[in-house]
Length: 356
Image (cartoon, rainbow, N blue to C red; front, side):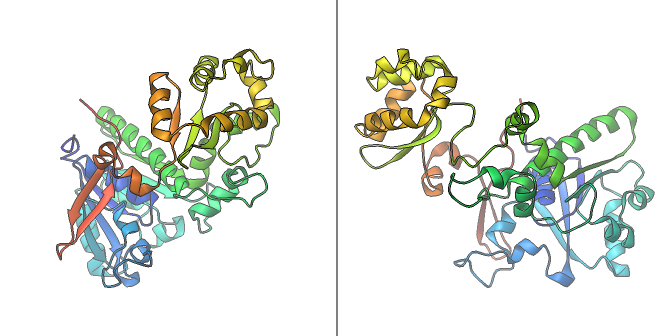
């Protein structure tokens, strides 16, 4: 699959996370991705976003590495005659341009869609912006706040909480990838290029899914519920086992609830009018939670998860990333390369599908 786009050329004029994630997607599929970075500012700003224990002498961070695998990087001053000539030479060979320039900046640099089309008529110009109607600075946590995610995240009595990855950027990257793939199909059929656009804001709103329809159809404003699910119980409840491990249940059907009760030797709950249906369990989830916790505190985690898997009960152990990447199935998602000094760099694939 690494050779799927081996003849495709992508010019990346994007920084931070969403745009570069799109570029890395095509690099992983074999495309030639040329990333232009502003030499005057030290390149992509994420080069400077280092953890406290990262080596200060390196000119990149782990954050930067997460979405900049497999690219040819050119440090360039696009405002200079030489820099522009170098970029134009690459644009003439490009199939796709990925840009997160603001509209005014793109026009000033003559790198807006119309200007790039004058250089390469059948180009696919992929534009990422923060908002559909304004050019204000857009960073992920601000979008999480403005599109409702933070209002729903955290515990009932706690402060709003952001998701621990820049998920709005990741969602926007997926939207842009899909748009580019459709544009490639269109070009294959019509021999014509396209301009495709998305925004962090629209990508976030498009991902509100059932929480949006809870409001749109029932005028229920979702509240902070920690890990709980507003429509299903027990779903998202975290329990502690006898050996002080944490697990989360994801019971989505009556049959799964019946299997859970059988496993925990509390079959009488199945016919208890307080827990007969999912709606009943949602209404009485606190009481149910207390009952299940007493039962699960008698189990060691490996024994319960083993039994749960045998009985088709959805359950997950709460793991930190050290534990995650000790598993073979997670290790298979790691890709590596070396910098110019022989330092090994690791990151997770952006691709999680197989194509045969």
